[in-house]
Length: 307
Figure (cartoon, rainbow, N blue to C red):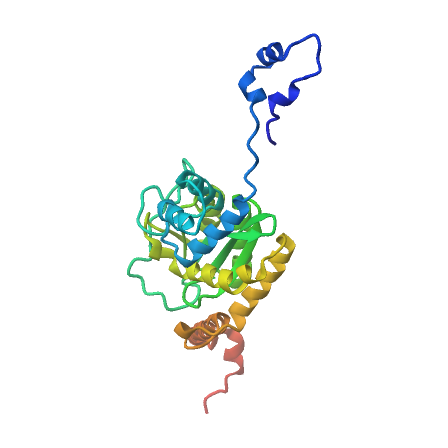
């Protein structure tokens, strides 16, 4: 809840107390009373959308380069304002830099486990990230969980805040529908380092991996997902509100998972690769257990006797 402006408590028609005396009593400066207020920044949303477009195209842009590009487009804007808007959007350049995505104080940081790791099968490694989604009169945050080997989007959620609850809901949904991975990788954001999120992973027996600071390649597959989603759907449609965004994004992710062919996957869809590999894994498990199955009492009784 916002704090009320104490200047609104002034009664300019009061004949018994002067403005000077009223200001002294409520603790405000007279200069602030008579100064004309600056109009609100009505173009923040337009700037945030443009920053998102530039960042999606070139995710290595920090606030300094972003400011320069906006100025080249004719915007009269300071770097300080660009920094404020980028913080509000929850984005930061992917290139090496100090103080990249910060965990909350007291949150545990886990080591990066994917260096030199060969990832060739579904449910070996899952990855998650959050991105900014512009809508008509504001913006939302989108979290997604993908499988590294197949690139399939296993779960996603939209939220109007950066609270951990929508990330946890996406995780629980993915685990319920798709089993569990051996390793879960994310950045060091406060949502993913929170006790609630890491606790859920630990309880499921999943190893936790977190990107190193300034290592933009650590989560590159999900960054490609964001670029495709925004250029192929969000920017083209210009959703008016959260309801439209939820329906539209759901439709695009369904298309991405089941109809969009990927060259890197041999021109197959992500979900086709995920389901095929998981079916093969199940078949292998059954073959491995074949010897044990033939020794059960029921099968021993039906086995023909030797002559």
